[in-house]
Length: 100
Length: 492
Image (cartoon, rainbow over all chains, first blue to last red):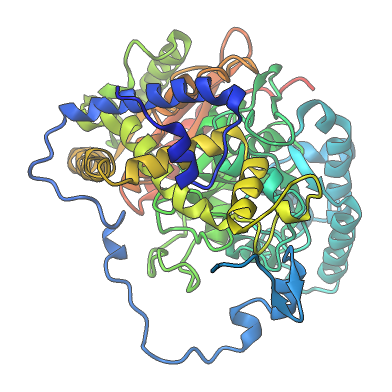
């Protein structure tokens, strides 16, 4: 198994692994990926990937019409949303600068 | 009777409430006392609100005495897995990242339960974000097996299952992505059902793997399971994967005989890897089913040998996407609020929030998912797994041409000791080997208790049916259950 750059995978996932846990984490990660090698035995030349679990879920549509249900029924209120927000200002959600 | 009301099942409660043998208030008080007595030892619950529950029971008693229609499950205490949103109860998903999160709305299943009069008695413990097979990954506590407090209740719906086993509720609701209802039900001697994908709304279930997750009931009897399914099943406009027009009235099928029912014993799930006591009990159950008239043969589903690998590729892939929302920006724990964290920029908010908020197993699965979806690896892992997934579904469909239901043990092992498998993630994953394939194919599957080992540990038997054929599961399970002795309550 090639050397997996665990730090890179963690960065992609927006995670940090403690240095002292790193080597066991890497070992376990590699062991799991090696288990996946089992799939090399399977011939899938005539098989399509599964797109919907049950046939009834293919192409589920709704009417192209405005949803006239009252706001309350459809979504939580701005107040309820902001109550749960870590940082807010003037009735808006506040975040760190996205662009430099 | 009044002291042991908590021991009753739904059917008995409904019968007794009808003739005013006791009141909902007495029932709820009995359950609350039971929780107070045993939950310290077991840790099924993460939150309860006894005063509120008792008040709700009082309201129902009052309305009932006025002749109002209070609903099918009126006054009956139900425990709900803490990954299902409940207004008025925190929903933590067993994680530090949501440890104080209070939902603004109820999940659809919760709404339907409340509409039928059921009383949410509390939220139950689970492996963090439903990732695990023992609740040892919960950020808060480990749920013990009521039959042996040194062993696990199973997972990830360990809290929900132990609560039913220990009579800390009359029934409970869990979720099953790779066996998270069935495996603990098997470990703790209960009836656990994973419905067909699309049968029960996932709206309000905190998503783990969206193509695999299903909510289902955990009950003391098969009848109760069928009854709860009638309440919670059905199309929901808020969940586009639910299906319209599928009949979900199962009670009428209970009691029909299984003469001529064709049962296939899955060869790939009866290997030497299965614990001997489990295998023996399953063979005994097969004989009993034959005595009841079923025609039983072995059947091979060769692609099932790959189901664990397929599951542990697809599930983490979906997890990595579904857990991206926990970023410390909109809700939940945020590193910004933590004075001890140095936050210089937006990336720090994400890194520090997620690293502190998530446990190790959650991080592992997010990273596995990111890896198998990444450029250069997508074809070999994710795309391949999605193709093999279709092979698995095809194998099931092929076998259902010849058989009405399939049969296997629910788990390869008995409930294991706490700490026994925490050092080796892959070994923990292998305990799912009998259950994951039903999620991959979307077919319904049930685990029923079929006996105890010589050490008093429960053994579960699994039945699997075609899509939307829960009626077959109920028919065969009920027939088996009615012809067997009910396993003893745990000694608590």
